[in-house]
Image (cartoon, rainbow, N blue to C red; front, side, top):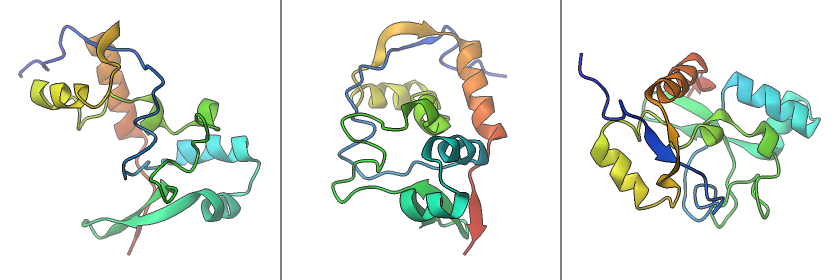
Length: 147
């Protein structure tokens, strides 16, 4: 088996620039654990929370996925000078940039470095820590429903 390109770890320290939360369209997918944390944060029941903060997004796999809404300017619905639900934010947000799509290979990682000032700077995150983040994502599937 080939070792991952990050076998010696990767450097990342969030610069709190909020670029990953703002400006560009995107999807913050939610798992059941994410929704549970956000329900506790919001004080809303599940249906009310989904109506107020979420949207269902069609994907080509025949399912719709539960995601946070975006504002008209593409900012995350939870962004207001910073994440208003920071302590309850979805795992997708807290595990950035250790996503399977970004640690596929060195080229993908380096391409992301151009978009995020925290990539390749600061704290060294070891291979085991990155693998654990990837495994947790697989253990917390996104909420989806048939179209």
